Length: 483
Image (cartoon, rainbow, N blue to C red):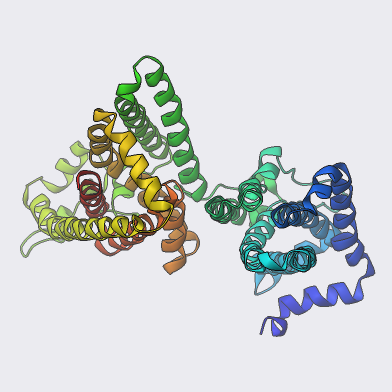
């Protein structure tokens, strides 16, 4: 079906009719990638002795190929890129088609290397097949990130825009994690690399889409409305980095027996500080806190009762106007607040009950893991280490119940899921936000944590409020940490 699409047919005809396209899109990137392989020939020589090193080298080769291919392919079309701006499908669809084509070309090249690895190491064929499946997902996200490196030339030949070094480096995010996970046979790291690459692609594309109409006039371009996927990812990353730094500092001034307290101080201070800073950052961009804690991005609406004037409907609960303005405008009474509580409490109760049930299922899941060879012994050792530090469990319980639900729901659902829903919509946004939430937890907890993230995303959108998701998160963490 893709071959029947005019956009994909255009790209195929471009290869068939334009000999320079083969040079620009294939020969030059392969030459550049081959030059880098020559520089890393020691690693490549070692790669031939182990399937995982060979597969890791294939991933690095394919990634570098895409990194070079994107700008070269777009440059080869030159000023002709302005033509799709007048098409019914538009330039965005054309660039998406290019990303798909680049992903297919790179996959064919990587497939040759993986096929060679399968011949050398037939006993590891299933592992190589997993690498191929992971590469297929990673290549599409990498190709879409390469699209954002496009620059065009004016009629005078002057470049109208310059891609920053930070943007170029962002296209590589996830590659090292993915390849290291394959080389070391730590599959959870490979998954982290793929998820991080996909979310980075969504963030970069969201910003890129906002500047597409100004591709030939970059001085007039506007940023997409906040919060964006990039805002959410940066806030989450900063919170984790600050947590690590504060935990190390706290542990340096305390004994090993109080490691749990140090962790609590680090995460508690970091989650509160980053959340408040993010709220301030968004407020300065006309996004008050209430518009994050409620869905859709507007307000927690209050319908007027019979006999009330429509002016009494207020946006105060969404945080979009000040308290004094609200009182003056609607002659404040507690009736709207009570009506909102009547709507909110049932959803919070549903969230709490769902969290308790999910926490019980997570407990049964942990009991099942204890019967697996290797994993059960690892869990028993971890429990023994925790029992030697009596304050760790109490500190972790306080952290997981009192701090984590508010900070994580605000960042992962209020910001990230909302931005992804605006970018992708539907189940793709639910799955992507849940996957990003999951990779920040221990691998053994991924299944219940992913379920928690998906349920909270759905509950947030269905209820129109973030507090029920907080209630679900608190109840789940309470059961997991106390039981």
